[in-house]
Structure formats: structure tokens, C-alpha cells
Amino acid sequence: GGGAAAEPKVGLGVVVVKGETVLMGRRRSSIGASTFAVPGGHLEFGESFEDCAKREVKEETGLDIEKIEFLTATNTVFLDEPRPAHYVTIFVRAVLANPQQEAQNLEPEKCDGWSWYGWNDLPKPLFRPLETLVESGFSPFK
Ligand code: 8DG
Ligand code: MG
Ligand code: MG
Image 1 (spheres, rainbow, N blue to C red):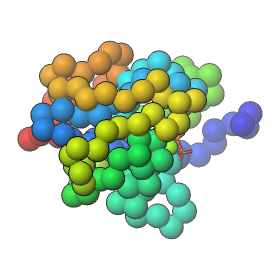
Image 2: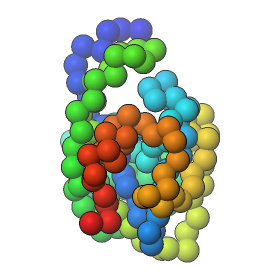
Image 3: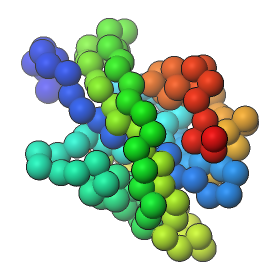
């Protein structure tokens, strides 16, 4: 850390859908701290969107996902954060491989915990890229 965020980075957010609900947790990470976001992280060198989605969801929640589909991308410049950053974020949708499986908070230093929320009853405040998506009228259920 400490250096200037000179280049945009690629993030990937996974909208995990169960019935009419999606999985969200309150962030503890420096960017978007205390806002609600979906599981996800940085695309690693050589990785497909699908592999990144599976890996991040497994690392952060212990859940296994399937039927991964590209949704959309956002372009967000975070100038009002402790460290300015610019993210292009790929959003994908997925469902649980086993709907009985429970989400675990496996990175408690990065998230307060995971819960399921209706798209019309999302927790607030949302992480800015998600807020932009929701305000644009986007829905993973359409
Ligand atoms: P990693 O080290 O596990 O790769 O990264 P992470 O610690 O899990 O990173 P992250 O902050 O969860 O995700 C990387 C970036 O992706 C984040 O800083 C900004 C961007 N991003 C969005 N929207 C969302 C979102 O809804 N969820 C997540 N997790 N990241 C998002 O722009
Ligand atoms: Mg993450
Ligand atoms: Mg991660």
C-alpha cells in the first residue's frame, strides 16, 4: 500500500441468487467500508470470470456455485476513499450448487457476515458500484 493507484483494476462481484434473494455482507475493507456488497474480489492473472467467481465465493463464504452468467460491468472511480482507486467491475450471477449449504463468514476481517436479501429490500448503504446498478433499474431476476 501507500503508492498511488495509477491504473484501473479489475474487480469481480458475484450476485448469488437463492429463490428471490441475493447474498450480501457489510464490508470492512478500506474501499467501501461499512457498505453492503456481494462477494467477490480481484481477477487474478490468467483467470476466467467463471473461475474467479467460484474461487472468491468459496474463499469468502464457503459456498459452491454453478450456472455462472455474465450480467454487466461497472466503471467506478473512488476519489473519496482513504486511498483513491479506479475499478472496472465485472458482475456475474450464479446459483448455489447445493441450496441447503449455509454461508459462512470465512474472512471476518473483510466482512461483518453474510445474509440473504430481497432485491426490493436491499440493505443500506450499498457499495457504490451496486448502488449505481440498482438505481439504473438493473435486476438479476429479469
Ligand atoms: P482479493 O484479495 O480476495 O482478490 O480481493 P478482496 O479483498 O476480496 O477485494 P474486494 O474489495 O472484495 O473486491 C475487489 C474490488 O472489486 C473492490 O475493491 C471494488 C470492486 N467491486 C465493485 N463492486 C463490488 C462488489 O459488489 N463486491 C465486491 N466484492 N467487490 C466489488 O466495484
Ligand atoms: Mg472480497
Ligand atoms: Mg476475496
